[in-house]
Length: 186
Image (tube, rainbow, N blue to C red; front, side):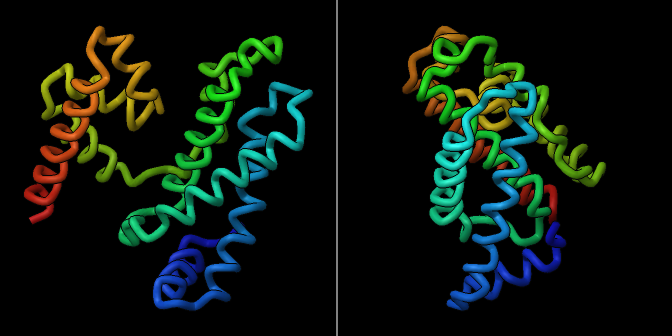
């Protein structure tokens, strides 16, 4: 397991164009992703290895697309584990494994997922406080979207809204939270 400090060092070096550092992160991420997926889906004994490989490729592609948006003042493991979990669930939803594999329930996958490293309690309280500062409906939408990994369509169906209204609510809530967070840190 690579340490947070080493990952952040390699990440910062990759931002400056060090392709060796970027390659090292991708090599580590491939193994970490395989391990996380295997652990997350451990109750499904017959889950094909090829599908784990497909999900791993999707995670690597997503990482390539968003790695420069990572806030290096935060912990890396919770961020990457969340990306892996969301990409796995997205893949399974797209492929509709609920009907193809007996006994696979997307909601129970979350229960089997390997716990992420402990978060700083102060940071957790701050995040919870910020989330609770939103109106109840917006907070619910953010929880479903950003924490539970629901799609905008699923949120719209559950909350009896249009997808457009869900998108607008998410945009406004995130804008508000970003402002609150920056005000809170001053």
